[in-house]
Length: 188
Image 1 (tube, helix red, strand yellow):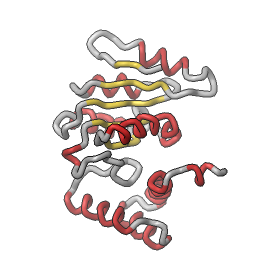
Image 2 (cartoon, helix red, strand yellow; image 1 turned 90 degrees about the vertical axis):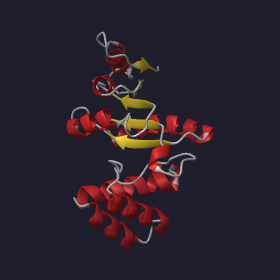
Image 3 (cartoon, one colour; image 1 turned 135 degrees about the horizontal axis):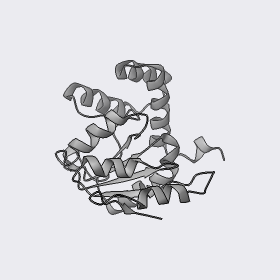
C-alpha cells in the first residue's frame, strides 16, 4: 500500500493543497486549480472560500483543520502545530486522540526557523482565539515548542519528533531544557 493510499481523504486534500499553494501564491488561485482537478470536496472548497471572505485564519497547509465536534473556529480549543509537513505522521496521533474525544482542534505548519513571523502571530493570538493548549511537535533542533511558550500564555506541550541522526533524542533534550519562566510539558 502506498503512502497516498494510507492517508485519509482530508489528509490527501491537505497535502495536495499545500503543493498547490507552493505553486500558486494566492489562495484563490490554489482553490481554482484544485477545483479543476475534480478531486476536491465541494463542501470543503465552499468552507475555504467562506473563510477567505470572512478574513479568518486559514491553515498554513491551506485548509481549516479537522475541528473535532466543533462547528466554528470559536469552538477550537487545541492547537496542533508542527515545524513541517514531515512531522504530521507523529502529530496526527494527537489529532486522532482529540477526534476520539470529540475535542475541537486546528492544525498548522509553524516553523520556528522558516516562518518565525507566523510563529509570533500564532502565539500572540492563541489565547484570544480561545485556545486552551498548544501541542507543538518538532524534530532536530526542536525550537518550536520553546519559542511558542515564549510568545503565549497558553500551556504548550512539546512533542519530540524522531530524527534519523539521533532517533529524536536531540529533539527531546532541546524541548526538555527550557530556561526558567518558559515551561513546556514534554512527551517522550
